[in-house]
Image (tube, rainbow, N blue to C red; front, side):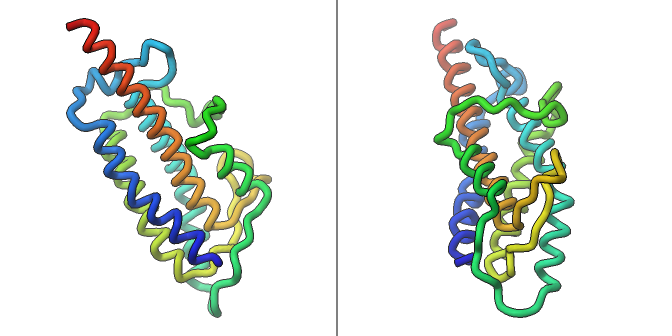
Amino acid sequence: MSADFVAQYRLRAEALEPRIRAVTGGLTPAQLAATPPQGGWSIAQVFEHLCRVAESYDPAIARALASARARTGAPREFRGTLFGTLLRKALMESNRTPMPAPRAWQPLAARERAVEEFVAHARRTADRLREAERLDVRGMLSSPMLGLLRMNLAEALAIEVVHAERHLGQAERARAAIATIAAIKR
């Protein structure tokens, strides 16, 4: 059922902020900007990437939500799309296969308030999922990267959650690497 699928991701979205606070808490701007010794993005770059992706998806999700609010009748049974299902599964945190970010989503320099901006987005995603539990979430929207690839509203919101979870895992690994370096230098 749609409400069950959406409720599962709402709970996961609500768990994002405490996880964000745990990974960033107590770090200086220099530590947030430190690149892990094994390579990859700094914690600040991870949040810049998350902000860029969220900003690109936000208009399409807002339109799909407005359309869902306008539809009358009971919500229809949820059915995933091929693209939405594949992308959601590919972005799962348990899938550690590297996935290069499209150029437009690659973080060059992180904005000063990337963490706080992404916290606000995570809250908005949880609120949208809470509202979506009562709506027909099968309305379609296009990927902002490639308009031919379409998914439904429920999948788009779920993808935002799994994408954040995946990158929070990356940020947690970066923080552990930074802590190890700090301990060695003592």
